[in-house]
Length: 122
Image 1 (tube, rainbow, N blue to C red):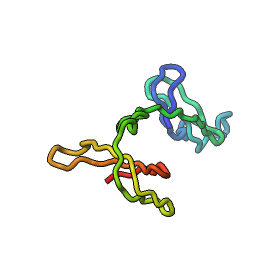
Image 2 (cartoon, one colour; image 1 turned 180 degrees about the vertical axis):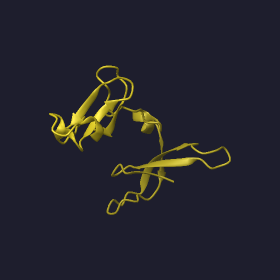
Image 3 (cartoon, rainbow, N blue to C red; image 1 turned 30 degrees about the horizontal axis):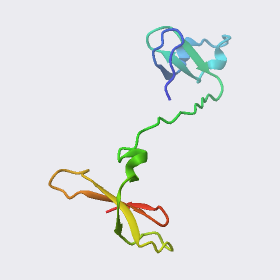
Image 4 (cartoon, rainbow, N blue to C red; image 1 turned 60 degrees about the vertical axis):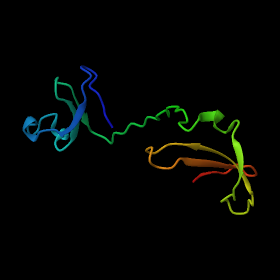
């Protein structure tokens, strides 16, 4: 987790409050042994006197399917192929081929069962 300084926008680091900075009997004596967020480029610091956490839900980035997207199975051929899903019993599948490795390797075949829509590759 990264936190940023509200004064200068640099990253904050966690460090221990130095004992030498706190005199015995001083009003800051309760800070002895505590951690703090501190900025390395300006005097900002925030003493952690209780448990600190921050939760932020990250929004997933939408990515495009590299194997053809929504229209990958449009206008593809059918072939006799046994479906690997247990209990399906499908014996036909749609298929297409893509060269995903180097040119001296064979093409990869992608299949989709016509009965249960399970997808696999060979």
